[in-house]
Amino acid sequence: MKIHEFQAKQLLAPYGLAAPDGAVAITPREAGDIARRLGGQRVMVKAQIHAGGRQRAGGIHQADNAEAAEIAASRLLRQQLVTAQTGPAGERVGRVLVETAVVATRELHLALLIDSSSGELMLIGSARGGRDIEERAASGDLKLNQLRLGAGHEARAEAVAAFAASLGLDGALQAQACALIDGLRRAFLAFDASLIEINPLAVTETGTLVALDVKLVLDDNALFRHADLAALRDGDEAGAVELQAQRHQLNYVQLDGDIGMVANGAGLGLATLDMVVAAKGRPANFMDIRTTATSLDIAHGFRLLLDNPTTKAILINVHGGGMQPCDTIADGLGIAIRRTGRSLPLVVRLAGNNADFARSRLKNFGCAIVDCPDMWTAATKAVSLAAKGA
Image 1 (tube, rainbow, N blue to C red):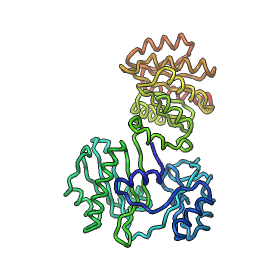
Image 2 (cartoon, one colour):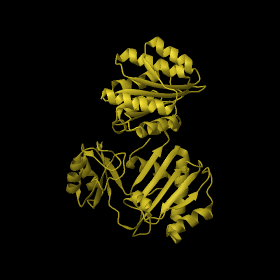
Image 3 (cartoon, rainbow, N blue to C red):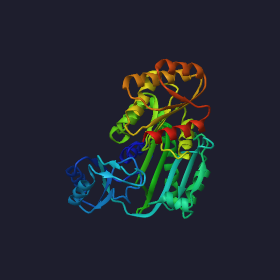
Image 4 (tube, rainbow, N blue to C red):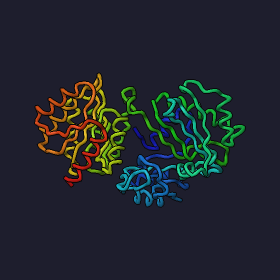
């Protein structure tokens, strides 16, 4: 779950994160009032959306006074901001962060994340942060230093100090960086985070470290332990459809193709999506059915596909396990078809627990399916049927 920049700064402040003074506004007048409260000095007016690349897209403005802050806010609020990370539709700007402008003598990059290959907590940093860091790192123009922190419960002081030194920090700045890294490590564990990223981390003229931008991503699967953090979810930005799917034990992402896709397992779902693309098809969605989903939850997911007017065929790739047998998913499909009354070509690949029983359940529901023996056959057949229905 992504949260906004201003929320991340508030959550991380007790863990030693220093950030510019500021507040959030939802109207231009509020933006001007905040600028006045900050002393009428130069401020930054920043669109609050769940995507990076805001500055290049015009989502961050510098304002020299309160009147200029109001004008900047009026240009951003209620607009669709399109960045490299939002897709062509962009994201609607519902609020702006107005904060004191900071003069940086240097800009660093600092991040904590989970290394997917080892499951360890990884500390990453660069002595040259700021704009377009992903592109610069990919091109080899930027050196990223790494430090493995294991499970994250302890960090070797000498290793962290050496890491800070690799960013060009010494003396008091190195001590500040070590304290900040330790605070971020503790916050990462306390919040069940999957990413904390500070870019840029400014070195100011007075010799302090100030976070100018912060990204904090929380593990959705751990939100049951954090009701207060779950309440931070922005329903407007996450999308009503995807939020509904979350409540029905489904991981769902809307895409722009014409083949509705269902799988039980994120890895299986991604592999299915890749096969459809390899077969020159266009997925209409990604859907992973969690093991905790009931047949009624699954029916809600199928209804999302059936209610989507761009869907021309549905591909179901299921491997039944002990907690989620194939027939539970078949029941969900049958219920959804009876509720919606919409009929689409159904390409099915079933394997594992209760696969044969699931086929009989689909027959009893009156579902005419194309039963395929393997994933590639199912993917190519779904692409063919979607093309015929276009």
